[in-house]
Structure formats: structure tokens, C-alpha cells
Length: 322
Image (cartoon, rainbow, N blue to C red; front, side, top):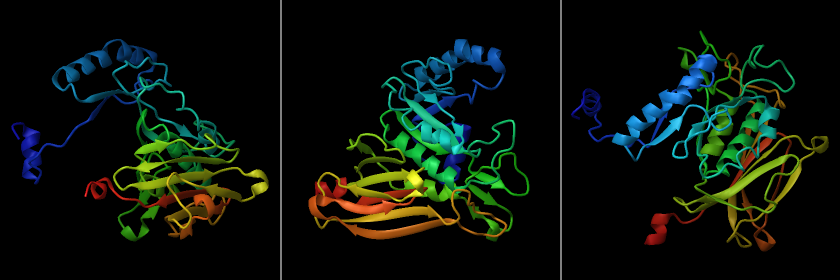
């Protein structure tokens, strides 16, 4: 409260300082300013700012605006920032991109989304008019890939979030809105992101098989705060567009154990989208309770272009201590 902005924060009802864990220096310096701007960022701008912050705040994690994928050697005590905007097939192909990151390659995914249709004109043309269902499934694949490498990925953030339908620069946004609140539209990406992000995995678990199949991408883990065991999957391009049968068991699950399965599908196929002009929602959400069979196995089928989260509730850390 001894600084102008600290006093302002306190006057607004927050007398205690917020905990600040991360500071990123710059934004997309590997794009802005061309080669000379990027060279100056690598050679002296980032090192000088990093040194000044860490001398005064040694517990804050500094983040460089590029990542190890943007032609910069990130200092071992810094993190990088990766901004992938892709067509859906791009996220499909990059599922294992983070698997080989080392402990020294700590990375934030500060921006990501599906922006262009498969096989279409890329940045020379326009973005897709709205987030669309196959793009949302691809984004789920990407989120699962970041979460399964959670010891090296600080977090992943969809971007952009808000689009004012009266004036905008970027058509792919999570939420479209106008002054008339009845015309607020939650995109296909919103529904996918909500499902994946509200079932947080804090500790990843090994899986068998340890990688994706030709169409099914998945990860499993624990939420130490709730004690839940969680399995996440996205089903992309199946053979002959057939459903994919799943048989899943998690450590400690016995026959008769119950779990909640949430399955998202698209009612209008891969190119269905939520149009704020008509207020539709092409995302179909099916929530059901499954019971584990012999050997603690849960069984269900996932259609092509679907996203699923299976949650086995458990005891939270606080309950275990009682």
C-alpha cells in the first residue's frame, strides 16, 4: 500500500498484495520488428530486464516472449512462451511436440487456437469465420498434450477470448458479444475448453498404451486437491468414420466403482459452429454415470470428432488428513 497502485488496490477492497509468480518480458518479439528487433531482444533487452527483476524479486519466474520453438536459446532459469495458431490437422500432428522437452525447457503456451480450415489458404487469407467443431476437437488434443507434460508446461491459454461483433480484428474468439446480452454466443471452443479446464489434472499418470492410437488421443492423472482420478480423450479421424470403443481402468478402481462420463459431440458435423445471429449451439453434451465392470474396467464408445472426460471421485487431501 506504500505505492500508488498498491494504495489503489487497497481502496478497491484488496489490502493484501496479490501473489505474483510469473512475469513475461515482451510479446512475440520473434515477430515484431523483424530480425533487428529480435536480435536486440535476444542480445540485450531480455537479459537486462531479466537481471533487474530477478535481483529484486528472486522468486518470480521470468518468461521470454519466444519459446525454444522460435529460434531462441532460452536461458536455463527462464521459461519460454509458445503461440501456436493452427489448422486442426496441425494440432493433430503436434500431439507429441512437448514430449521431448527437458526440465530446462519450461514453457508457457500463452496463446493457441484453431484458426484455419484443413487444406485451406493460411495467413494470406482470412481466418475461419467462427470457431468450429473440428477445430474444437483439435484444440482438445492440444490441451491433452500440454497437460500430459505438465511438469514442463506452465499452462495453456486460448486466445483471443472476446469478440465484439460490431468491430473486430480477429474472427476466431472464444466468446462473441454485443451490447444486447441476449446475443452473446459461447463458441464450440468455449465448451471444449470448459470441459478440459474444469477437470484439472495436477499429477499425470502413465498410461498403457503410452501414446495415442491413429485417432484417439488421451491422458490420465490425479487431482491431488479433490482426490479424483481423471481420464481425458479426444477422437479425431477414425477409420471409415466409425465409433471407437474404449475400455479404461485406473489404478485403485475396483468392480462396481462409479464414474461420471462427459461426452461432447457436434450435432452438425465437423464444420458446425455457434452463430450469434441465430443463437444456436451445435455442441451436444451427454453426461452419464458409468459403473466399472470386471477388473475395474469402464467401457463406452466415442464417435469420430468427440471429446470425453471420465472422472472417478476421490477423497480430497483435507479429508485424508482428518
